[in-house]
Amino acid sequence: MDSTVNDFSAYRFGTRILDLSRPQVMGIVNVTPDSFSDGGTLYEARKLSVDQALERARQMVRDGATIIDIGGESTRPGAAVVSVQEELDRVLPVVERLNAELDVVISVDTSAPEVISGAAGLGAGLINDVRALGREGALEAAAATGLPVCVMHMQGSPATMQDAPHYDDVLDDVSYFLQQRIRACNDAGIASDRIILDPGFGFGKTVEHNLRLLNNMGQLHRFGMPLLVGTSRKSMIDHVLHRPVDQRLAGTLATVAIGVQQGGQIFRVHDVRETVDVVRMTEAILNEGRIDND
Ligand code: 7PJ
Image 1: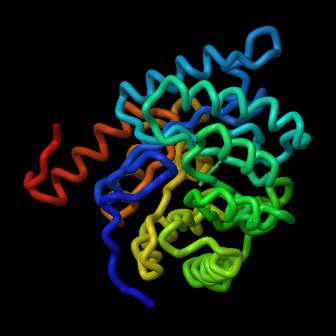
Image 2: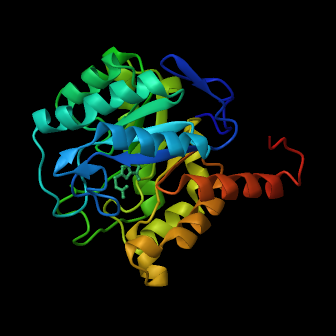
Image 3: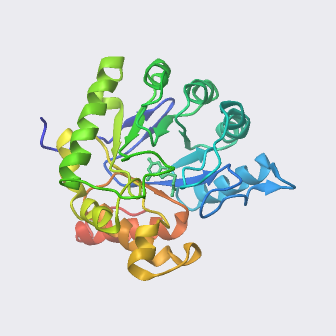
């Protein structure tokens, strides 16, 4: 297998192209009433406000986000199960509006084939699935869009994944899982140059598993694919710092700095402005200033 990082300088997300040879920041816009850190904030009188979702995304783009990730299903342990129709109703209007009004890659955080197809038809540029396209019909739906996909590792399912995570070796096990999913994607017609990998921080992992994965994440580059890092405000930070979810920014930024050092390409975060600063500063250090930051 290729042991080098490929040239990702013109990575295509549908109609938009990003330079993944530099780290990019993905802003999270949750259109759920119950996500763990920002759930419900885009709701007015229990009804999703597309205007507010647009405003949130617009500010993230001003702050330097080049991708906006829209999610309509909370995967936090114990979260309510949403029907496909509910997810479609939450996600599609926001995808359509953001695509019309913002020059940004729109990512859709979903496992449902119907949402994958619907969002792609309305201008989404990336399919981001925490279940690694494991649901029935998801691989085929994603393949048909022609878009890149992000496949993430998870042990177990959201309801039970934090009960007793166990690995022989977390790096080997995550790596093996991703390799299997790459093969499944390839077999379904998704070429390797359309696959982004994610170790799945917090998805069926103890704090030690998460820290070991982050500190060695660069090893996953042996697949020759971009890596996505999703650590924002997650409980691994609480386990180290003992901070509630609204006080995990500094902890998150430390994970981003190490993620940049490990060669991560996409950073999925709630706090875009601060993350962009840390990404640029870390890049400047790693390159000893030989990089244009305008
Ligand atoms: C992730 C995600 C992640 C990718 C969520 C949360 C839970 N997608 N969706 N990676 N996490 N690719 O934001 O805490 O880590 S939802």
